[in-house]
Length: 161
Image (tube, rainbow, N blue to C red; front, side, top):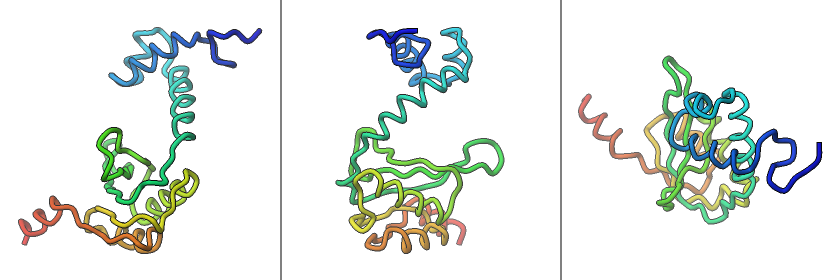
Protein backbone atom coordinates (compact mmCIF):
# COMPACT_ATOMS: atom_id res chain seq x y z
CA UNK A 1 0.00 0.00 0.00
CA UNK A 2 1.15 3.53 -0.72
CA UNK A 3 0.14 6.83 0.82
CA UNK A 4 -2.12 8.94 -1.37
CA UNK A 5 -3.24 12.54 -0.83
CA UNK A 6 -6.94 11.68 -0.95
CA UNK A 7 -6.89 9.22 1.96
CA UNK A 8 -5.83 9.31 5.59
CA UNK A 9 -2.82 7.11 6.29
CA UNK A 10 -3.94 3.75 7.64
CA UNK A 11 -7.56 4.30 6.67
CA UNK A 12 -9.26 2.12 4.11
CA UNK A 13 -11.43 5.06 3.04
CA UNK A 14 -11.00 8.26 1.08
CA UNK A 15 -11.16 11.59 2.89
CA UNK A 16 -14.36 12.40 1.01
CA UNK A 17 -15.99 9.18 2.26
CA UNK A 18 -14.89 9.93 5.83
CA UNK A 19 -16.32 13.44 5.54
CA UNK A 20 -19.66 12.05 4.34
CA UNK A 21 -19.64 9.48 7.17
CA UNK A 22 -19.00 12.18 9.80
CA UNK A 23 -21.78 14.32 8.34
CA UNK A 24 -24.21 11.43 8.78
CA UNK A 25 -23.00 10.69 12.31
CA UNK A 26 -23.73 14.29 13.34
CA UNK A 27 -27.36 13.80 12.30
CA UNK A 28 -28.16 10.25 13.38
CA UNK A 29 -26.99 7.34 15.55
CA UNK A 30 -23.82 5.58 14.45
CA UNK A 31 -25.62 2.28 13.80
CA UNK A 32 -28.07 3.96 11.43
CA UNK A 33 -25.29 5.82 9.60
CA UNK A 34 -23.27 2.61 9.27
CA UNK A 35 -26.24 0.83 7.67
CA UNK A 36 -26.68 3.66 5.15
CA UNK A 37 -23.04 3.73 4.07
CA UNK A 38 -22.81 -0.05 4.28
CA UNK A 39 -19.93 -0.51 6.71
CA UNK A 40 -19.87 -1.96 10.21
CA UNK A 41 -20.52 0.32 13.13
CA UNK A 42 -17.09 -0.66 14.51
CA UNK A 43 -15.36 0.72 11.40
CA UNK A 44 -17.43 3.88 11.60
CA UNK A 45 -16.58 4.31 15.29
CA UNK A 46 -12.86 4.16 14.34
CA UNK A 47 -13.38 7.08 11.95
CA UNK A 48 -15.31 9.05 14.58
CA UNK A 49 -12.72 8.30 17.29
CA UNK A 50 -9.90 9.50 15.04
CA UNK A 51 -11.44 12.88 14.25
CA UNK A 52 -12.86 13.48 17.72
CA UNK A 53 -9.41 12.72 19.14
CA UNK A 54 -7.85 15.25 16.76
CA UNK A 55 -10.37 17.90 17.79
CA UNK A 56 -9.83 17.27 21.50
CA UNK A 57 -6.04 17.54 21.09
CA UNK A 58 -6.53 21.08 19.78
CA UNK A 59 -8.69 22.23 22.72
CA UNK A 60 -7.49 25.46 24.33
CA UNK A 61 -9.32 25.85 27.64
CA UNK A 62 -7.19 28.72 28.94
CA UNK A 63 -10.13 31.15 28.88
CA UNK A 64 -12.65 28.97 30.76
CA UNK A 65 -13.81 30.72 33.93
CA UNK A 66 -17.31 29.36 34.59
CA UNK A 67 -18.46 25.76 34.18
CA UNK A 68 -21.73 23.94 34.56
CA UNK A 69 -21.91 20.25 35.35
CA UNK A 70 -24.62 17.65 35.65
CA UNK A 71 -24.97 13.91 35.42
CA UNK A 72 -27.39 12.06 33.22
CA UNK A 73 -28.20 8.40 32.68
CA UNK A 74 -26.50 7.15 29.52
CA UNK A 75 -28.58 3.96 29.28
CA UNK A 76 -31.46 2.45 31.18
CA UNK A 77 -30.43 1.70 34.72
CA UNK A 78 -27.62 3.35 36.59
CA UNK A 79 -24.98 4.01 33.92
CA UNK A 80 -24.20 7.69 34.35
CA UNK A 81 -22.14 10.24 32.47
CA UNK A 82 -21.23 13.68 33.78
CA UNK A 83 -21.15 16.55 31.31
CA UNK A 84 -19.15 19.75 31.83
CA UNK A 85 -20.00 22.86 29.82
CA UNK A 86 -18.52 26.34 29.48
CA UNK A 87 -21.19 28.68 30.87
CA UNK A 88 -19.93 31.59 28.76
CA UNK A 89 -19.66 29.79 25.41
CA UNK A 90 -22.86 29.78 23.37
CA UNK A 91 -21.65 27.77 20.40
CA UNK A 92 -20.44 24.23 21.19
CA UNK A 93 -20.32 24.68 24.98
CA UNK A 94 -19.47 21.05 25.89
CA UNK A 95 -15.96 20.84 27.32
CA UNK A 96 -15.73 17.36 28.79
CA UNK A 97 -17.81 14.21 29.28
CA UNK A 98 -16.83 11.34 31.54
CA UNK A 99 -18.48 8.18 32.81
CA UNK A 100 -19.79 8.11 36.35
CA UNK A 101 -21.00 10.79 38.70
CA UNK A 102 -19.65 12.39 41.83
CA UNK A 103 -16.48 14.02 43.03
CA UNK A 104 -14.12 11.86 40.96
CA UNK A 105 -15.66 13.29 37.79
CA UNK A 106 -14.73 16.82 38.93
CA UNK A 107 -11.16 15.64 39.56
CA UNK A 108 -11.08 14.10 36.06
CA UNK A 109 -12.31 17.41 34.59
CA UNK A 110 -9.62 19.27 36.53
CA UNK A 111 -6.95 16.95 35.06
CA UNK A 112 -8.42 17.39 31.56
CA UNK A 113 -8.35 21.16 32.01
CA UNK A 114 -4.64 21.06 32.92
CA UNK A 115 -3.76 19.03 29.83
CA UNK A 116 -5.55 21.52 27.56
CA UNK A 117 -3.95 24.83 28.63
CA UNK A 118 -6.49 25.44 31.39
CA UNK A 119 -5.93 26.01 35.08
CA UNK A 120 -8.39 24.78 37.75
CA UNK A 121 -7.61 27.74 40.01
CA UNK A 122 -8.87 30.13 37.27
CA UNK A 123 -12.39 28.67 37.42
CA UNK A 124 -14.45 31.29 39.30
CA UNK A 125 -17.91 29.71 39.14
CA UNK A 126 -19.34 26.20 39.05
CA UNK A 127 -23.05 25.64 38.45
CA UNK A 128 -24.40 22.27 39.60
CA UNK A 129 -27.12 20.55 41.57
CA UNK A 130 -26.96 20.13 45.34
CA UNK A 131 -25.15 16.80 45.19
CA UNK A 132 -22.79 16.55 48.18
CA UNK A 133 -20.34 14.63 45.97
CA UNK A 134 -20.26 17.43 43.36
CA UNK A 135 -19.92 20.08 46.05
CA UNK A 136 -17.00 18.22 47.65
CA UNK A 137 -15.37 17.63 44.25
CA UNK A 138 -15.61 21.33 43.37
CA UNK A 139 -14.12 22.33 46.71
CA UNK A 140 -11.19 19.93 46.25
CA UNK A 141 -10.52 20.23 42.49
CA UNK A 142 -11.67 23.76 41.58
CA UNK A 143 -10.51 25.63 44.71
CA UNK A 144 -11.40 29.19 43.64
CA UNK A 145 -14.86 28.37 42.27
CA UNK A 146 -17.97 29.79 43.87
CA UNK A 147 -20.84 27.31 43.64
CA UNK A 148 -24.15 28.34 42.13
CA UNK A 149 -26.94 25.82 42.62
CA UNK A 150 -29.07 25.62 39.51
CA UNK A 151 -32.62 26.98 39.76
CA UNK A 152 -34.34 23.73 38.75
CA UNK A 153 -32.99 21.89 41.79
CA UNK A 154 -33.89 24.71 44.17
CA UNK A 155 -37.50 24.74 42.92
CA UNK A 156 -37.60 20.93 43.13
CA UNK A 157 -36.48 21.06 46.78
CA UNK A 158 -39.12 23.68 47.66
CA UNK A 159 -41.81 21.67 45.88
CA UNK A 160 -40.94 18.55 47.88
CA UNK A 161 -40.92 20.54 51.13
